[in-house]
Length: 231
Image 1 (cartoon, rainbow, N blue to C red):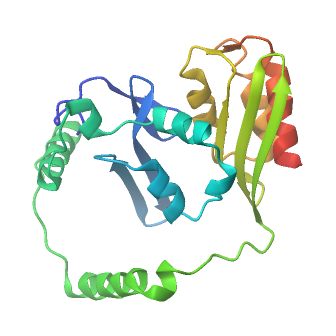
Image 2: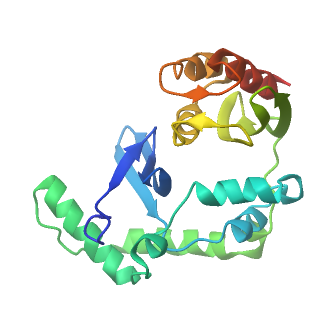
């Protein structure tokens, strides 16, 4: 779909990210049960990082301007790559063409049946309600967000993590250290998402031949991340 929009150099990264020149432009998700598989995804047409952090109720006061700038540098948008923002209809047409090409079939417009329309309406009412929009999800001590800062010979390393029921839900690694190649940190973050905290050390050390951080070994980095999560 991105190619049909004019972006030729998009590639898959990690478990579910699509990137352009090392910067994330799209994400995908998968849901599966006994009745079938649903694959979904997003395409960033335009983006405001500070607004996102505020809307998602993240502790933005604990995230420095430098970290926010680092986060902004890790993502890109269709508007930034192309110089303009395509319409939603253009994106839909690009996706239709992509589905037809990949699955070698014709895409036929369909209509929701009566049951589907009823279910859709109930979902819309729920997610548009003030109760849902302004509610807080109770964590019951199962979810935790941590920010750890370490002074190392490589420089300052900051690790932002969100853990839910023993699984790494989110992780962001920032600081003034130098990593080569530059995209390796994003690749590492992508591989750490949705894994058990028990597997963190192993996943990080698997990058020993893929990444170099001047002043610190991959094993020391693995211990820093592991200790931050277990703190």
